[in-house]
Length: 104
Image (cartoon, rainbow, N blue to C red; front, side):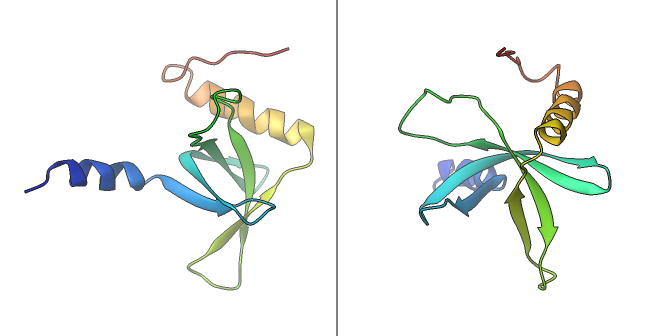
């Protein structure tokens, strides 16, 4: 019997795989779903094996419905003010769980 396998499956429950601009698959850990101004935004943490240079930087994407009820699509957010507000909501919600570092 392999008990390690169950742990791995549990960890993968909150893993989302997206394709980047070059079509490469990138894995993200799903951290939260934030509602702001009748829109939903996902907070994702890239799972990077290669570099620690961007360690801990989250990605915020807007959730858009698709024609299929079982699927949704994520689009980048160009409005910096919206990104900042959504991130502030996330920081407030998880202030006791994460150690946030402000980069000015």
